[in-house]
Image (tube, rainbow, N blue to C red; front, side, top):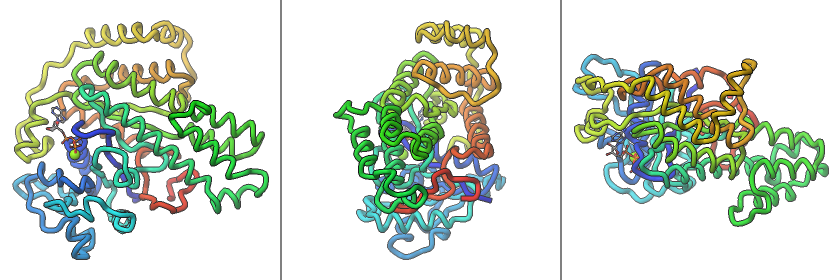
Length: 420
Ligand SMILES: Nc1ncnc2c1ncn2[C@@H]1O[C@H](COP(=O)(O)OP(=O)(O)OP(=O)(O)O)[C@@H](O)[C@H]1O
Ligand SMILES: [Mg+2]
């Protein structure tokens, strides 16, 4: 079985990445061998929320040459008395700050990447540190964002997350257009001036220049300058197939989530990059005291023996009313009515402008609510994991995570397929 590497990241700290990554990995372990890796290597947060003795961690991998497979810690019998999570293991970050591990250089990152790629697992979940630096970017996928975690209480993190997406897409573009790129072999040299394309990429990425305002404008320029060239089609399909996945943490109501997180995120991505990106809400996790307490008691929420008392589910009618208001508030009501009047053929929806992208988000929330009401964290995880597994099994060219982590300079296939 091909492994799936699923990074959990966010633009800023404290939004719930670690708590999410731990419980996501536990959920996935029901379906296959799952290894959670603490890549927030300066703070060692995973071990501090899982009360299990750690024999070897990344310190041993880097300093003692211990193979990474021997740095995997299983759950103690006290945490998993019935052996339900035997397929789960985690790799802890060092106990204390070890500078060369906390601030890994390229060589160290490559060594770790190679070892992660060799792990025998169905799922590898990466808990990344906050921010956008090589310690984060080098572990992110090539055709999608991995899972981005947001919370309505931290809007700056949402905008920072859209910068992660931007950086990933430009990294991908640069991985295609460099001297000696395999594109040189695929397309006759001379017809395509790589230096010229590189300049266009630079201008598009530069937020201080509005010369080429976003990826669609970039694509039009490439099309103008190299009319009919297969590369322009290739670029377009790369953008069309880039998936952005997010989870709304600390969900405290629809309106707040929509105005604080969804709307600014979608607007930022569509304006700065392209309305053609597929933005997918994987679900939400409610604000929950017991989910929070699980961290202090060091018994991950999904392992806690006491099932959370069921929160009173929001009334479906109230939720639908609130949703309708948001449709109107966003000027989307009319569009929605039109769409309802003419049933769409069954095909993948591609948003064509910001409004359509927002409409797609609201409709996905509506579907989410029809499937499961956001009443407790266990159900939230069941839902998110079913969405993730659906993504992984859909076999589309671009879906969640990658099958391996590409090192800098590795040749990334244009469109990874199931065999990669
Ligand atoms: N849904 C939630 N309800 C209540 N509290 C939450 C929720 N999600 C996270 N928290 C709390 O928020 C705090 C930050 O969570 P966590 O450590 O998982 O964030 P993080 O993004 O990994 O932070 P860092 O960037 O520092 O690594 C913790 O105290 C956690 O218990
Ligand atoms: Mg963390």
